[in-house]
Length: 133
Image 1: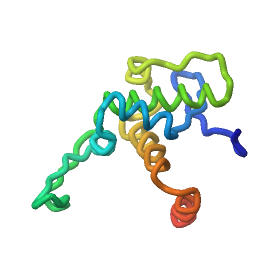
Image 2: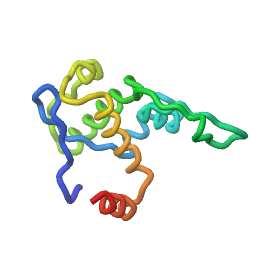
Image 3: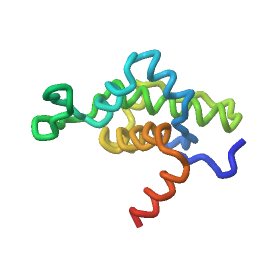
């Protein structure tokens, strides 16, 4: 199904494959109704709008939403395990919150990059990755 191996993350000494795809995006939509609010949450963004347009001068930044971020990680690991055909059980949100391998910012970055991949074509993702080098 996949031409390359899924990325992995280590949670409390156990390595898990993960993937954010449209199946995960659907879980986000079912739980939070609005995927854009989820994006704001995992980015730690408190948007301000002026005349219906995002006002970057008034928009504030804070800690990423812990619930959204940890649920995103759980769903990504569940999807990675399912894709890889593993019988292993994914950690729950409480286990993610108790782990000490990643900061909330690290976790939110992983979730955001996966989330973003649902909206960018493979070509766009490749160009973006190459521009970081």
